[in-house]
Image 1 (tube, rainbow, N blue to C red):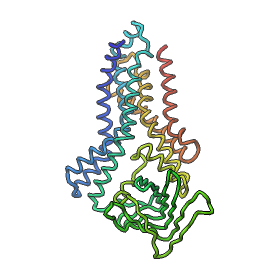
Image 2: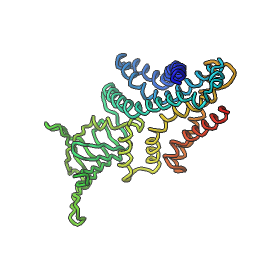
Image 3: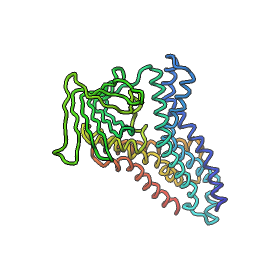
Length: 369
């Protein structure tokens, strides 16, 4: 059986690599290549644009890996079926369930690759890309969306509801919680926090305006509060500089699972619309659901490709596009339903995968008879 596995593995590798190259090129050209070309025409150095091109690739490959797995299985098994290799395997006592073991292995490997890219490579590449863009623009990117910054050096969580202005170096509607032995010890709330400079120890001073400071004790009656209004400021020191704050202006897909989970937990304390939290929760589960599509596509492709007629690469590509369209349509529908609160975020992210696995089971059962 090892000979069979090696034979089928070789048949799958070629079409898989072709699929990665083809799908990635198509998606990348439409989404990023024109943008980078425009930046080069506006004065961005060609070498910088080339670096950004490489940094953009992992985020695209996360989505094209499942598609490539599907194309590989369709082309490989269509070729085997057209050459009567499948019939020969049946005649020698090899069932379809045994024949798809290499397909199962391919699906699991590609799923793992997708998860590693999404969890490790994409967040690191996104941080580097954002730093390059900030350098090109000569000014950090601002935002009016809420975000959370974890400052481990001072054991603080900074929740910014009103966004950050890079030009004025001001965070708006800020809540800073400082912890002692994992218990909240100090709470600062302010209309805005203005950067006041960095000291020689590398700490950044931020002036808090129009707010309150709470010293939290074990006994509620022992808790103290201080109000500062108008021009008066309550300074606070954290490790994060304005440039560090900019690097936290990331999209959910550019965060790791742990970062996004912490972000959702911090935003859940209040001040954010329920729809925004649901959308972030869906993105959290998509960290697993999207890579899992590789396994789903591989298991669907094998029984569909087992037929007596000889199939071409173009037919395999066309069939893969049809399946991919049906999957992503279902995925977009269920995620939108989850964001609206119709179903749970977990169900919204994984329902397309569940439907795909059910379809794969039905197709395998019928084809194996």
